[in-house]
Length: 438
Ligand SMILES: NC(=O)c1ccc[n+]([C@@H]2O[C@H](COP(=O)([O-])OP(=O)(O)OC[C@H]3O[C@@H](n4cnc5c(N)ncnc54)[C@H](O)[C@@H]3O)[C@@H](O)[C@H]2O)c1
Image 1 (cartoon, rainbow, N blue to C red):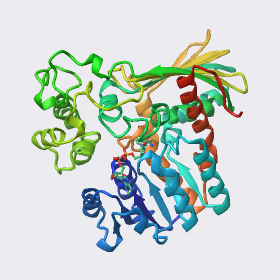
Image 2 (cartoon, rainbow, N blue to C red):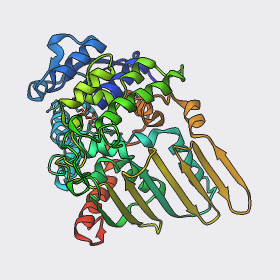
Image 3 (tube, rainbow, N blue to C red):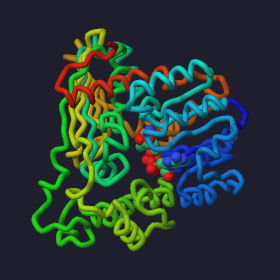
Image 4 (cartoon, rainbow, N blue to C red):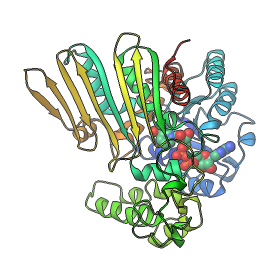
């Protein structure tokens, strides 16, 4: 890495803008990046950014129009909500920024191409935050496949375990619950997975077929006599989806677990996601987060929200080189992370994030295990999100700005996964098979 310090603006200082990229730049790369400007429509988020990064008042903006009146730094992190990514990124390119752009880019194909045109026209760098591409365990699987350890790759089984609590938080009560306001869930939650699938298949996708629906989180499944807000509900202490259990009890348990891990930055974990989305108080307490959910959308019954995105979806993919893949995304899991199997002509690779292993089995020639945590720790601080992928992505941004490395997930490389996701959603809605490049 070089010696130059690049100035950065952060547009959207929420969970990702503040706690993933801002924090990472501050804690890991303070000699490489200086956060100079922030913009968020929520003044409370601006206040937290000021507290953490010492940004002066004149460099804090609560209007993106005002922020975009001039170029304010070398690079810009765009971590606003999904539907704002493309218009903001085009403005940024016009002003001459290099951009770290949160995923998904968009769920609208015309917007995707409009951004690609601007990217080609202004010739700036755009890295899309497909963070798992940078996570050591995912890179390890790629190298095992490319080394030919399992012979020729024939097909891939891929499960994205959303978990019952993440579904409730983000896709039933939270920002990604309504298709009118956000991306289809297959892009919001799985554009990483689609991106990785075509990366491992090493081919463009030819066609997709998808099924899925919202099968559980609706009024028909609300227990008899339940109230529409958890605080008023007789099931508040029994229902596994109750806000009391997911925010107050779960935070307490997560924190207990962290107490036993001295290496984890306690202050960070105590504030940790998703609790710091519900409650901006510092430090969060049982009382503060209870009050926060009681006064927000996060206190609603999961069976009485205005959500309409799916809670389970499957996508079958045929790649141009003959590789096939199945992706299952489901809310109905107790643990998070991916479970993946690569089936080859001479062996298979299984990965189970929750159970911390990659298993390489070469037919008739034995089995080798790798610990995911160990692989991560050899390379990166994996207490940051996505198995250390967030840190590695920020490092890639630095290298790209300094002109010393390739962008693993540049905009042009990220188009394919989005075309796959858009086609999968069309297929889910129509029941038809979609060719990607028609
Ligand atoms: N790369 C990943 O793995 C990953 C993981 C989770 C979320 N995401 C994506 O990152 C993005 C941000 O997600 P998040 O979880 O941080 O959400 P968030 O709601 O916590 O943060 C978004 C922030 O943008 C601010 N904002 C909204 N409109 C704005 C505007 N017009 N101008 C300025 N600020 C504005 C909001 O006030 C909020 O603080 C989303 O697109 C999401 O899909 C990516």
